Length: 128
Image 1 (tube, one colour):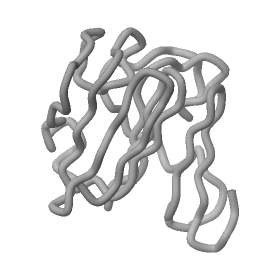
Image 2: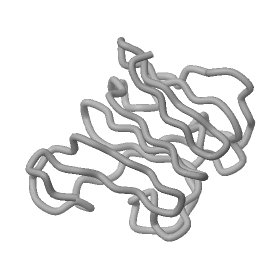
Image 3: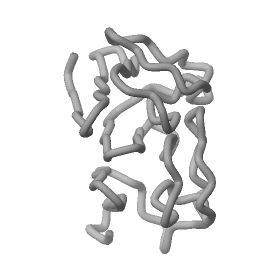
């Protein structure tokens, strides 16, 4: 693995070939497998669930996960307070791409971070 992220009760990692793996508690859908099951060891997320895109970076909050791919931002898990970035508070059991119109400007996302109750992305022009 070239990157790992740890939430309170779940973790995720990205391998050198852009594969995403998640494990731990899945009670909010934060593992991104399309269900609420816990995973006791790292389990691969099908690249099809990321639109065929390679994972570049991952961040884990308490009940949500953010994945940066070569083609955009994907989130899953607890949507309370809008932290998944989809303009609503719905939970997402599978990774769902965040629409680009939710971001200001034309900057490409280069970094993601997940807190307990919030999410942050940074654009190539330095804006958050």
